[in-house]
Image (cartoon, rainbow, N blue to C red; front, side, top):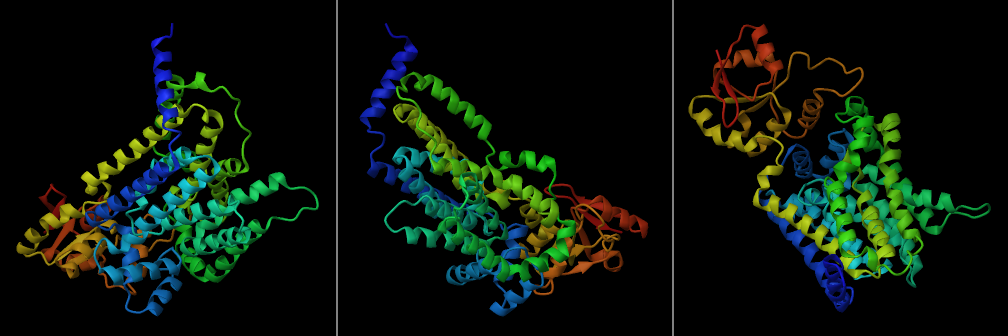
Length: 506
């Protein structure tokens, strides 16, 4: 007599076997439907979410009057990304109009393509169901956020997926695969300098298999060339930004950052892994009648993507000073495909296990995305909407200048305010001090000063503020601003506490 758990597993196994491990047409349709869901929801979120600090740098540079001015601004270290990204945004911005959506469209499209490439890569190496698992795991990372952001990270992800697909291509046209592998690295570095780190898994894989007298594969040579050529061509832009801002970069490499980085890339990984293991026990570990297959080279290479943040930590420590999780979004394709292949190796004869894992991951990703669809303002970093609520009141009360302590809120307010010419960024009294070691507390202010050569902004010192104190409203003043005012005998009185703090001067 079977136990209830055995009966449940048998019923699930029979149903999944009748489904035929998800027929290929159904797998393709499901992959297309999921990718389309993320494309459409990303565009919806993009239309209902305001730009934040980094995105405003993107649009301000992309919208400069001439392409030559864009080139000049980046050569002057105005922003950290390579020029081709801004030119791409410029094309979309011109085609679809200067709203909040157009600049984000390239990211949404890139995520859509990248998800389909991951699916096809895993499908070719396993089957349609496990291709869907790879796609779904990618959606459980921080990737969906970058599908509705006007920065180059979704494009970075897409090109990392293309390079992984090309590396594992085993079709008749091998020269095409080699070309695509090298080209994806060339274009990838042209959109983000840290894309060069994506060559590491392939380099390590060949080093692990290297034998005396063997030369590197043509794919690896194409990839290395695809890294080196754009690095050399674009080095003046990278060095220009680095000379000005690398010493005081806001997110320095630390052991705590390194330890947290995989949890930032896959925020719910431990919880989902626990659910996956519970499902394996409940649904089918007894049904696996065949031993596990040997690990494929594609799976091994995929797991080697885990090395990228580890090596990048030392690169950041010795060279760049810049170490943050989004710079390594390219690890997602390798990890997603490796996970799907690993599941296939162990449970290819227990289809109910893999089917359950797919439903879990796909459902979790969709639920997280729908949460943002219902509340797109929840992914906004500052209180810009709160300021916009009180702007008219401040204007009616005779305040001609809105003085911000926070550089992020200032840049957003200047973009969205009804009177952008009245927005002012306050520079504290110790703004000119040199950073000797560690993050610069005024890095964002310095970035805005650099941008102001190409995009008009107002900056005040304490003397400017004192001259216009009767006409000024302090927006979210910090302690340093209030200390500077107190030092020159100016008092701040509270006008609003909600929806954000506003002080008047006397």
